[in-house]
Length: 184
Image 1 (cartoon, rainbow, N blue to C red):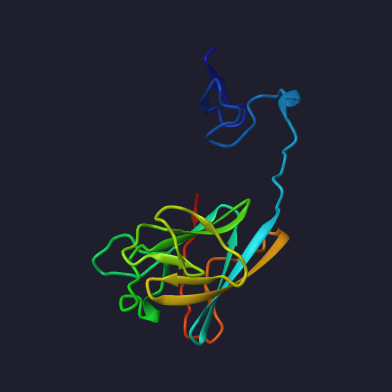
Image 2: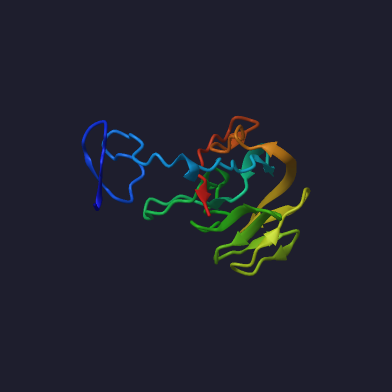
């Protein structure tokens, strides 16, 4: 026999289906095949980056395998950066539309220039395009001509179920940018 007939709703399911696709009834009574679920550890580092940009402080939390793209928004582009630096006169500072990315992995937070026209710098040193540079507390970043001082706070064993990183938060209230985080 090549099909499973559901005892509850009589729906004909494929032989390999362990449950009825119509009603969810368990089709195979082989409970020995059931294994306990292994839950992934939720205790992973949570990194909070605080950018000091002029009078404003911008706070961003990143969890493992999260990435944001920094740049400036343009009406002529379908792709938009996750964090728009337009309010900081991005065009006048030479920030590209898709300028750089911040990513989080097991080793920490790194910054990578995405081939921007006016460059990305860490502590005065230019970054080569597409070469990651790991960040540390107190680093001075420059996107084009826009200088940003970085405060980096790492909670080593944070319970990331409660880490909210969907909004960049501004200390002065001048900036409330929504960011979407993309999974690697």
